[in-house]
Length: 137
Image 1 (cartoon, rainbow, N blue to C red):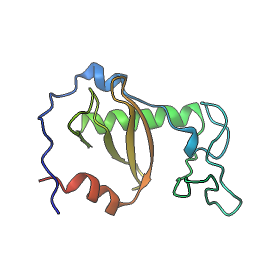
Image 2: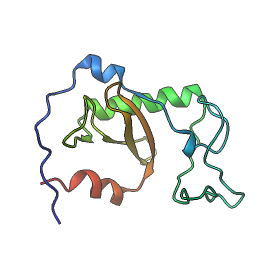
Image 3: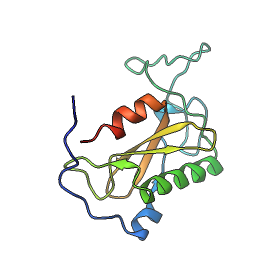
Image 4: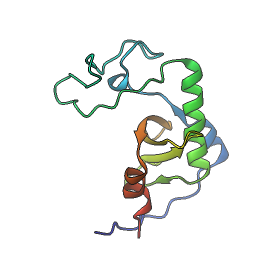
Protein backbone atom coordinates (compact mmCIF):
# COMPACT_ATOMS: atom_id res chain seq x y z
CA UNK A 1 0.00 0.00 0.00
CA UNK A 2 1.36 3.41 -0.90
CA UNK A 3 0.74 6.47 1.20
CA UNK A 4 -0.58 9.72 -0.23
CA UNK A 5 1.76 12.64 -0.79
CA UNK A 6 2.02 15.18 1.98
CA UNK A 7 -0.88 17.43 1.10
CA UNK A 8 -1.12 20.35 1.23
CA UNK A 9 2.47 21.46 0.58
CA UNK A 10 3.86 23.17 3.66
CA UNK A 11 5.95 26.33 3.85
CA UNK A 12 9.49 25.90 5.19
CA UNK A 13 9.86 26.33 8.93
CA UNK A 14 11.68 29.53 9.82
CA UNK A 15 14.92 29.54 11.80
CA UNK A 16 12.99 31.02 14.74
CA UNK A 17 10.40 28.23 14.59
CA UNK A 18 13.11 25.58 14.48
CA UNK A 19 14.95 27.20 17.40
CA UNK A 20 11.71 27.34 19.44
CA UNK A 21 11.00 23.61 19.03
CA UNK A 22 11.83 21.50 22.07
CA UNK A 23 11.56 18.12 23.75
CA UNK A 24 9.17 17.96 26.69
CA UNK A 25 9.03 14.21 27.20
CA UNK A 26 6.14 12.29 28.67
CA UNK A 27 5.62 10.85 32.13
CA UNK A 28 3.98 7.76 30.68
CA UNK A 29 7.39 6.76 29.27
CA UNK A 30 9.41 7.51 32.41
CA UNK A 31 10.17 4.81 34.95
CA UNK A 32 11.92 7.11 37.45
CA UNK A 33 11.69 10.73 38.57
CA UNK A 34 12.34 13.17 35.74
CA UNK A 35 12.26 16.96 35.15
CA UNK A 36 8.46 16.78 34.75
CA UNK A 37 7.86 15.06 38.08
CA UNK A 38 6.94 11.52 38.99
CA UNK A 39 7.09 8.66 36.48
CA UNK A 40 3.95 7.20 34.96
CA UNK A 41 5.25 4.13 33.11
CA UNK A 42 4.80 1.70 36.00
CA UNK A 43 7.51 -0.65 34.79
CA UNK A 44 7.78 -3.99 36.61
CA UNK A 45 11.06 -5.57 37.73
CA UNK A 46 10.99 -7.57 34.48
CA UNK A 47 11.16 -4.28 32.51
CA UNK A 48 7.63 -4.58 31.12
CA UNK A 49 4.88 -1.98 31.49
CA UNK A 50 2.25 -2.90 34.07
CA UNK A 51 -0.25 -0.07 33.58
CA UNK A 52 -3.48 -1.35 32.00
CA UNK A 53 -3.63 -0.48 28.31
CA UNK A 54 0.01 0.64 28.29
CA UNK A 55 1.82 -2.68 27.84
CA UNK A 56 3.53 -1.37 24.70
CA UNK A 57 5.01 1.61 26.54
CA UNK A 58 8.71 2.04 25.80
CA UNK A 59 10.54 3.19 28.95
CA UNK A 60 12.65 6.30 28.39
CA UNK A 61 15.78 6.81 30.44
CA UNK A 62 16.06 10.51 29.57
CA UNK A 63 15.42 12.11 32.94
CA UNK A 64 17.98 14.90 33.44
CA UNK A 65 17.95 18.48 32.18
CA UNK A 66 21.10 17.73 30.17
CA UNK A 67 19.32 14.84 28.44
CA UNK A 68 16.30 17.06 27.83
CA UNK A 69 18.49 19.66 26.11
CA UNK A 70 20.20 16.96 24.04
CA UNK A 71 16.81 15.64 22.86
CA UNK A 72 15.68 19.22 22.09
CA UNK A 73 18.75 19.48 19.85
CA UNK A 74 17.67 16.29 18.10
CA UNK A 75 14.21 17.76 17.46
CA UNK A 76 15.72 20.94 16.05
CA UNK A 77 18.14 18.99 13.87
CA UNK A 78 15.31 16.83 12.52
CA UNK A 79 13.24 19.90 11.66
CA UNK A 80 16.17 21.70 9.99
CA UNK A 81 17.05 18.57 7.97
CA UNK A 82 13.37 18.04 7.01
CA UNK A 83 13.36 14.64 8.73
CA UNK A 84 9.64 14.77 9.32
CA UNK A 85 6.23 14.04 7.96
CA UNK A 86 3.42 16.58 7.88
CA UNK A 87 -0.18 15.41 7.87
CA UNK A 88 -3.16 17.35 6.61
CA UNK A 89 -4.48 19.28 9.57
CA UNK A 90 -1.10 19.57 11.32
CA UNK A 91 -0.31 22.87 12.97
CA UNK A 92 2.85 24.89 12.48
CA UNK A 93 5.03 21.92 13.37
CA UNK A 94 4.89 18.42 11.84
CA UNK A 95 3.30 15.70 13.94
CA UNK A 96 6.15 13.21 13.37
CA UNK A 97 9.94 13.71 13.20
CA UNK A 98 12.86 11.30 13.25
CA UNK A 99 16.49 11.49 14.27
CA UNK A 100 19.44 9.08 14.22
CA UNK A 101 21.84 9.57 17.11
CA UNK A 102 25.60 8.98 17.15
CA UNK A 103 25.13 5.38 18.30
CA UNK A 104 22.95 4.61 15.27
CA UNK A 105 19.70 4.54 17.27
CA UNK A 106 16.66 6.01 15.52
CA UNK A 107 14.27 8.18 17.54
CA UNK A 108 10.65 8.97 16.75
CA UNK A 109 9.43 12.40 17.81
CA UNK A 110 5.71 13.03 18.29
CA UNK A 111 4.40 16.60 18.55
CA UNK A 112 2.32 16.95 21.69
CA UNK A 113 1.75 20.61 20.81
CA UNK A 114 1.98 21.51 17.12
CA UNK A 115 1.66 25.24 17.77
CA UNK A 116 4.52 25.52 20.31
CA UNK A 117 6.73 22.80 18.80
CA UNK A 118 6.69 20.55 21.88
CA UNK A 119 7.69 16.92 21.29
CA UNK A 120 7.94 13.64 23.15
CA UNK A 121 9.84 10.72 21.67
CA UNK A 122 11.00 7.15 21.91
CA UNK A 123 13.50 4.81 20.25
CA UNK A 124 12.45 2.98 17.07
CA UNK A 125 14.23 0.56 14.79
CA UNK A 126 15.19 1.24 11.19
CA UNK A 127 12.21 -0.73 9.84
CA UNK A 128 9.76 1.43 11.81
CA UNK A 129 11.53 4.55 10.56
CA UNK A 130 11.28 3.40 6.93
CA UNK A 131 7.62 2.40 7.28
CA UNK A 132 6.66 5.78 8.70
CA UNK A 133 8.88 8.20 6.81
CA UNK A 134 10.32 6.59 3.67
CA UNK A 135 7.19 5.17 2.09
CA UNK A 136 5.79 8.48 0.86
CA UNK A 137 4.78 8.58 -2.79
